[in-house]
Each structure stands twice: as C-alpha cells, then as structure tokens.
Image 1: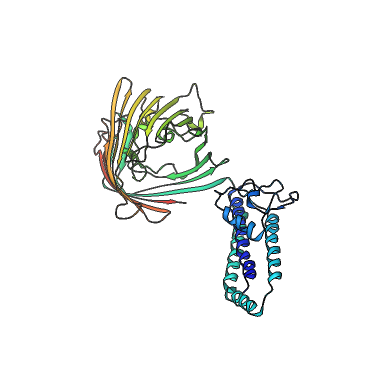
Image 2: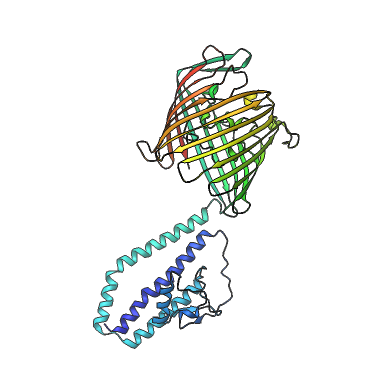
Amino acid sequence: MSKLLWKSLLAVPAAMGAAFAVSGTAIAAESASESVVSFDQEPVQLAQITSVSELTDVLPSDWAFQALQSLVENYGCIQGYPDRTFRGQRSMTRFEFAAGLNACLDVMAVLISQAGIDPEDLATIRRLQEEFQAELATLRGRVDALEAETAELRAQQFSTTTKLRGQADFHLGAPFDTFNTTNNADPDLQFVEDSVSVASRARLNFDTSFTGEDLLRIRLQAGDGSFLNPIGGLANAGGDGFNVDVTNFYYSFPLGSRVSATLSARGLAGDDWVASTIVPYDGPAVAGPSLPAFYSAGGVTSNAAGVGLNFALTDSVILDLGYNTSNVGGATNPAIGVSAAQGQSYIAQLSFLPEGFLNAAIAYVGSDNSEAFAGGAFGRTDTFAGLLNLDFGRFFVAGHAAWTDFNGGDDFSWTAGLGFNDFLMEGSQFGVYGGQLPQLAGYLDNPWIVEGYYEIPVSQFITLTPALIYGDAKLGGPDDTGFYGALRMTFSF
C-alpha cells in the first residue's frame, strides 16, 4: 500500500479522534450546565491555518497541543476563528463539528485521488471493514441507546436545581429491665416502659442550589413512637401520629472564600450551627445522649428562627456562631419574636479539625429561656464545654465535658467512649460510650447512661444498628433503672 494512501487512512482516526474529543467535551459541558442553549447563531467564517503557532490561545503546555500540531502540519485540516483563536475550552456546536470534519475529509479525498488504489489495497480495506463491522454496529447501538436514555432523563427530571433526599428510621426496643418511675414532686414526670416498643421517623429533604455553592433546604418529617425517654430518648426519633411537619427551612450561602452564612426560619438550633460535634459516636449510636446534651441547654423549641456564621480561620480552624429566637407558643403564636422573644439562645464554638488524629473544640452556649432543661424554669443559663476525639485510624477515644450555670447553681455533665471503625467489615463501627447527663427539671440527680452499639452497612442504602442500653433516671421512683435491647434500621435514598 502506497505511503500517500497510508497517510490518508491515518488521517481518518486523527480527524475523528479530534472531532469526537471536542464533541465529548461539548456533551460533558452541556450535561453539567443547567441553562438552555440556543442554536440560532450567526454564521461564523472559519479561517484555514498553516501552523499551530497561528492560534493565539493554544500553548505548547496544552494537553492537546501535539494532536493539533499533527492535524495542521500533516493534514492541514484545522480551522480557526477569524480572530486566530481556537477556543479549545468552550463547547462546540454541531455546525462547527460538521465544518471541521468536512475540512479533514476534503484533505483525505485529495490524498486518495493523488495516490490511487490498486486492487490489493482495496481488498485489504474491504477486509478490514468486514472484520470491524460487528464492533462498529455494537458501538452505534450503544450510542443510540445512550442518547435515548439521556433524552428520557432530561424529560423526566424532577428539577434542574433541586435534589430529593430521604431517610427512614425504624426502631425496635425490648426491655430486659423496665423503667417504672414517677417523681413525687412533679407527677407529670411519669415513665412506664415495660413492653416491646416500636418507633419510626421519615424525612424528605428538598435540597436546592442556585449557584452550586449555596443550599436551600426544606425538610418534611413525620414519625411516631419513642422509648428510653427517662434517659434522653432516641437519636433518630420524633413526631407524633405521623403528622407531616416542616422541621427544617433554611438557606446557606458563602460570603467569600472562607465565610458562610445561614438564615433559618425553622429547625436549626444548638449543634446545627457547628461544623462538627467531634465525638464519633454521635450519629452511629442509637440513644439520644450520643449527641452531647449541652448543645440543647438553651432549650429553644423547634419553631426557632435564627442566623449562623461560619468562619474558616485556616484550613483546620473553624469558628461557628449561631443565634436562635422563638416563642414557646409554637403554632398558636401569631409570630416568632426577636427582640421580645420568650426564648433566645446563642452558641459559639471554635473547632480544630486537622488531617491528623486529633480533633478538638471548645464551645459556649447561652440562653434566656423558660424552657431550658426540658421544661424547668431555670431562666438564664451559661454553658462552657470542651470536646475531644483521638482517632488512630480504626480505633478512637473520644468524649466531652460541660459545666452549666443556672439561677446561681451549677451542673456538670460528660460522656466518654471508645470504638473501632471497620470492625469485622468495611464501613462498620463498633463503639461503647457512657456518661452523666445534665440535671433535668424534677430529677433528684443527674441521669446517666451506657450504650454499646454496632453499626452495620447492609448495603449502600441500608444500615442496621443493634445496641444494648442501660441507664438510671434518678427520678426517685419505684424503679429508676432500665436495660434495653434496641435495633435500628436506616434507609437512605
């Protein structure tokens, strides 16, 4: 086969590769963009170039420089815009693709006509065509199927700006030693948990981003049931009678490269304002006190409105500030107060979150709220806390301590725990923690709790967590202690 003919045949993959590479870039860019592209464009007269150096926006450091240089110098089938630019970073239209491909095909036609094809070469070409016919047909079918699926997804998409995320939690609790306790000073504080209990909660988050860096979240939540109430309840429970409620309504957005702000109409308070609660058992564990209880010392109800600021002082040092205000009347109150609100709380936390094994934070929570500490009229409270996590990879030791001042008195609470990540299987966590909870209204002393849990990832979307939980309510009733076996199944989608 003649040298000139081989040159023309080699131009085929070079031209098609360059064309489809740019076409692929255009498709990727179109997929990433949420805007509607108009194809009613003015005609552009492309200019033929004889050297890649004529393109002012193509540099030798560009990853496609050698490919462009080969197409220009060997085949002369690259065209630029009238201003001598190639614009390799932008998406191309189908018209531009056709014009570039046609230029390369014209060169191939000239090369073939100059070389001529003898019968042996023609037979070789036909044989190669027959050998790759099945592969080409398969590839064509895959491309057609992909285009059909892409068109269907675009036609049926929920929203170009909003993603729907959901979580459902199912709990089963079996008491081995039952709570049966009543506080004599407050008969309303009565807890009788002596049978197998079921609790569940479902959440749907509508997460919207308008710029790619902001977040508008509206959360719908419904649930029913609970247990472990004398010692803090469940971490993933809430609601009554499966009544659907808007439990989150907030908007977060950046204020520069290191500052972000959050405006909340409902649902954010305490730990919601901070980058991390530090202790690794917050989240995987089943009982509510796995979240350090001092975050809710302000007692602001769930209808709280607020504002938060997050400052990334360095890549590993973060300052979080948050303010909440609410009326305890909830839905029966005509408005949420600010300057004269019945409940106000504020939080500041400085966190140290480096890449290494040490994570730590110091926090302050203040409040002026008649609901502080689960219904007790403690008025003004000030809480100071420290949190620590030593993460050695698959093994961690963590805990927190908090001191609270209210009405001239003081209270001390803490938790401490250890655990193993990837225990027996990848993605799992086995842990044990325990501690002394804050002094609650009507309680004779600080309740305390111990929990052992094992979070098991059944699949990408399902997590199973068995736990053993023991606690002492310190209410002064007939039986203040309880021992539970609990099982939580979580579905995420």
